[in-house]
Amino acid sequence: SSSRTPSDKPVAHVVANPEAEGQLQWLSRRANALLANGVELTDNQLIVPSDGLYLIYSQVLFKGRGCSSTNVLLTHTISRFAVSYQTKVNLLSAIKSPCQRETPEGTEAKPWYEPIYLGGVFQLEKGDRLSAEINLPAYLDFAESGQVYFGIIAL
Image (cartoon, rainbow, N blue to C red):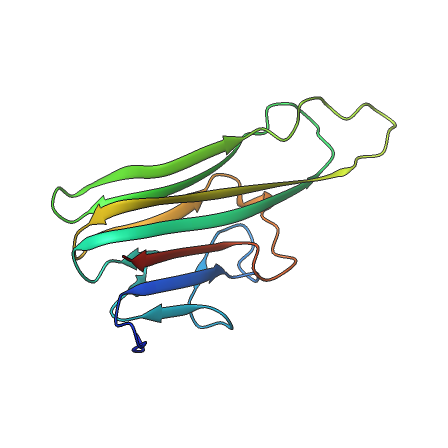
């Protein structure tokens, strides 16, 4: 249920559920998370309440220890399922490869961290569904709040 904020513009800021292991699950009923002025969170997607320009943003933080191979590719993508043409299109996407070389046998596997931040402005329509997804949830780092989030702001 959306609350009203003084600006009345649709906004949302949702955060990852640290208890949902093996998946990226968004939550709105948490400290410092919100859904306001018509934005809804349904089936892990933000539902756009009205036509207009929106800033869409998301950050994820990946963490690993050592590198058993060099072909670890971490992706983060924000997609739009457009109500008008019933297709899913990537709006923002990035890839990181944290392992430039394998950890040699017998040496200490050092931890690594890789954040990915995505943000952009898009014309959206009422009923559009936005998703922020990753390919390897096992590498997500939920250790601290504020590391993994997804939001939209009507401009």
